[in-house]
Image (cartoon, rainbow, N blue to C red; front, side, top):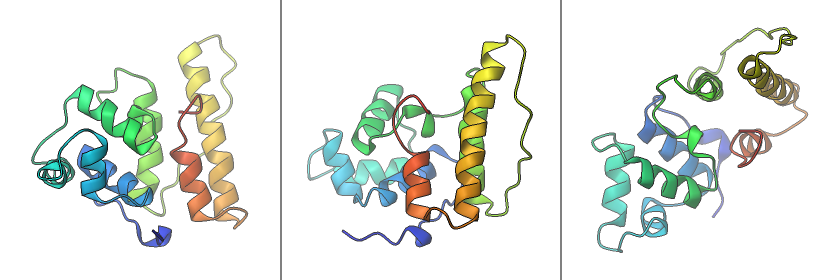
Length: 155
């Protein structure tokens, strides 16, 4: 299926909107995602539709299943409580999708021994580098989104 990456928009920062965004980016239908997380043909689409419309919030185990089906880290779609320091990083990644002119000035590298600050700074630096490549047309929107949603150590 051909996906028009420029036309995929984030409607809000809700869990459901983020799931819908990545599902569309992956070129999946609600039915396909529902089937991938173990729902039958009969109700798979309805379950995903309820999650995406935020009338139903997926439990943690279901979020894990959805993340696996979408080949992403669950941090991209979980509800942020900011007890996890990376929640701010994930929020930053999504903020630029909802606010195209989002500007977050580059922070200086943290030189202290604070592991959390260093982790955030490293992730931010990677994001900033990729965003500049995208803004300078050195990478496509598809490549930028693939980078954002890559599963693994970066996220």
